[in-house]
Amino acid sequence: MSVLPYLDVGLALLVVAVAAWTVAARALFASVVSYVAYGLLLAFVWIRLYAPDVALTEAAVGGGVTGVLLITAGKRLGALHDIGPDVRPGVGLKLLTGVLAALVAGALASVILLLPDPPPSLAPEASAAIDSAGAGLGNPITAVLMSYRSFDTMLEKIVLVLAVAGVWSMTADEAWGRAPSPFRRSRPYAPTIFLAQMLAPIGTLIGIHVFWTGANAPGGAFQGGALLAAIWIITMMARLAEPPRVDARWLRMALVAGPAVFLVNGLTGEFVAGSFFAYPPSVAKPIILFIEAFMVLSIAVALPMLVAGPSSEGSDQ
Amino acid sequence: MTGLLHLLSVAAIGAGTFFFFTGTVALLRFPDSLTRLHALTKADNLGLGLVVFGLILRAETALSALKLIVIWALVLLSGASTAQLIGRALRRVRE
Image 1: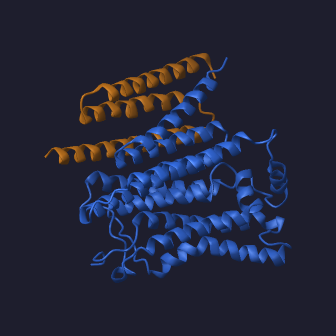
Image 2: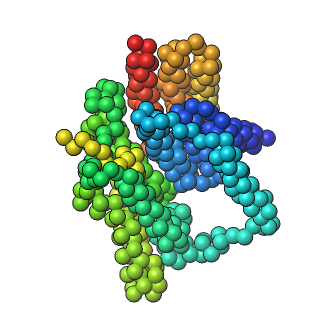
Image 3: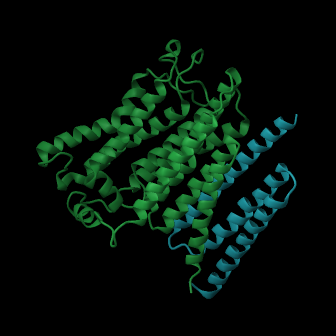
């Protein structure tokens, strides 16, 4: 008699409760903290669903980067309240938002509840593809991401680049091209600096390890890149590194490197391997790792730039 | 795995769980934020330390034992630093 089913039910109830609290919390900060806890709990759920790769991503992105992103966004919102008139949404707008959210949730729920039994699945085709094009990779998840649905994976990275472009487009004209404003006050607390100094070398090593081991074990480009991004964010918070100017050429090259290398490889596949985004099976593994290395770079650059926000006036003394 | 090692491992993990439990009770029951921080460090240092020790006894390779120690050290590092940061932020609010 195992206790695991009970733990699973407890975990599921906890996830629902934390989700409800995230929506119900009145203070923005409490809501964000609860959302981060929700992300970490979801990582446990993925572990229990035997999906460690997804769990790693959820822990790094849902529990880490998104939290920082939301907290900084909340601070900016607070600053807006200080300078402008307080315009709160009216009852009609709130009702409309609630109804739309309920509609989306209801549509999703009905799709899941009305699935035919057995549900339609692409799993057989995906696992067949793993054996041919993803040859040499011990981790089937990476094989699916990089060879079965490589076009989607590339588009996901393009979405990240677009998001950074969207953030940068919020820059005021006179500040264009400068660096985003620093994360914190001019003299960060000593523990922040200590933590950043200790974590930077260890975290960089672990980030590269997670990427490298992703070929054969749980891990991969996104997880490794997110860890490296977190390291850059904390070094910027400790003011050990300042955010770069957004017109810096190296920054922009690094940002587009992942999707660009991916796309060039995909086009080459048309001539070398016979179809768009196909790799010659004999060299599939080195090519996939080569593309992934550039994706790690792009992710490690894009996420901190999303958190850093648009460039600001007077940040370039 | 010999019986004695198994027993020691279970005892260590059990003791670690006890410290997590008391830490959580204290987090819920203590009156203010500084005492709650104090309670949390017990769960981090001793609780996780004992659980990691119990798991090392069960580790199959030296590498996985080493990884467990690194995890413990990282949690210690981040726990101690963030406790300092929260404490400072609290003091700043009070002043």
